[in-house]
Length: 361
Image (cartoon, rainbow, N blue to C red; front, side, top):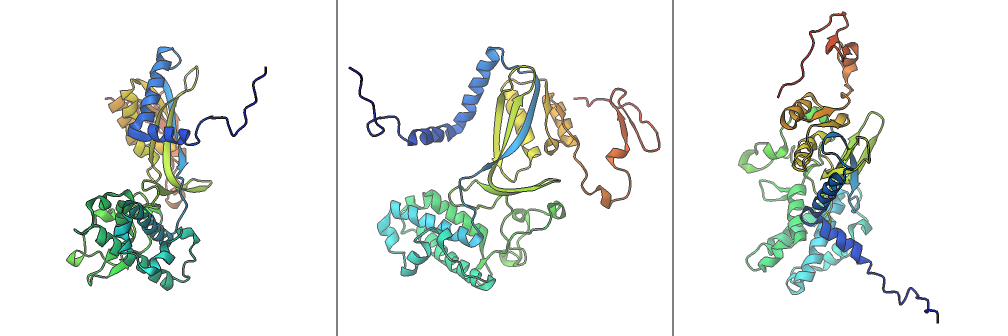
């Protein structure tokens, strides 16, 4: 007798949350990196991957699963998220703080709010949210509040966002910080970071400089406090995203090309800032005597020298184009002719240099 056909209703299958729970477990304690290392070891033992030879690294953007919020929406949603978590943790304690107008401001996600129009009205709204958040933080961190409440993740995110978006003037008034500078990065490369700037009189920040932190520090969503905003400019396009930057290194000798290392870093962090950690991790995995192919984002004379001296890695990649060369008189890199076999360089006057020597460790 033929078995009865199963229907979707009685097929047990597996719960939809199994895959998401598995991903959460893999994200704990760098388990994913450990699993990748074990896989590479087995591939090496099978002769499919060599620990010497050539590898290449490139980066790509990783989007965080969050909405893009403007600053007013950010503070509103951050306070709403903290209220939601506090209501689950201790609803009776929170009920003594909530006022009637809080339900209207924080009863639903900030994206559904119709924010006031105009700079003045929007700032007044942000200051009202700031006052509500400060009232909540003061109550949470008071001696009368249960200590466990101040340990809630959304409460800590609320505290950090309030530090980044508000400041207290000399009269004790809460103020809305100014937007960050939008000038080109080249114009502020030599400027000290705000955290290192000396405070003004009485320990208060200068109102003209009391702006939000740079993108590498600023929290942009209460639901992923590590995600950062980044804008990447190239000669042909620009890209904006909120999330992370992923660096993937794969073998590129004969045989299968296998990803052997993955590094996930904050989105605004430049490619070259991840290079030293990549080389250290590859060395710990047993990779040595490598020729490492990268793009221009990882290449500087210093990085080539450091890779050769510290890790015995030959770093190979294109020299960065000088996008501002036309603004300055004189010769450019293209005016000099290299002879790679003779290790010499000929200048525009046809004068040839003495042969160069490889960097000695």
